Length: 81
Image (cartoon, rainbow, N blue to C red; front, side, top):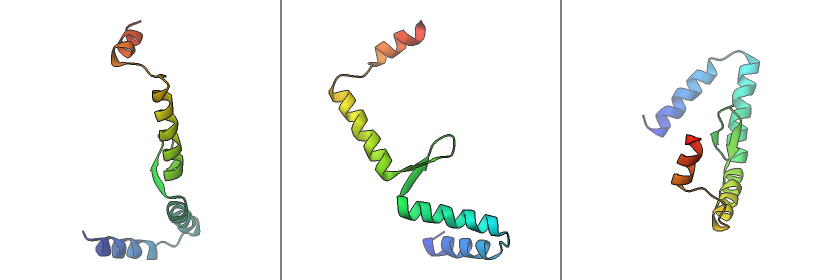
């Protein structure tokens, strides 16, 4: 399906929804996605924004540069205990 076809399909489906709560939920999801640049979700369903992901990535890189990490062998040894 092309982007245009997917959009048309979504519009048709939304047009058929009469429940105001569901429509508000859809609208909130679209606003969150658009405004916060949501790039994924945690297992519990909470969103992860691009900004949050970049911050976490920078923090992880800093920990690695400072030597705060485990090698594969160290992890294997920890799991065997």
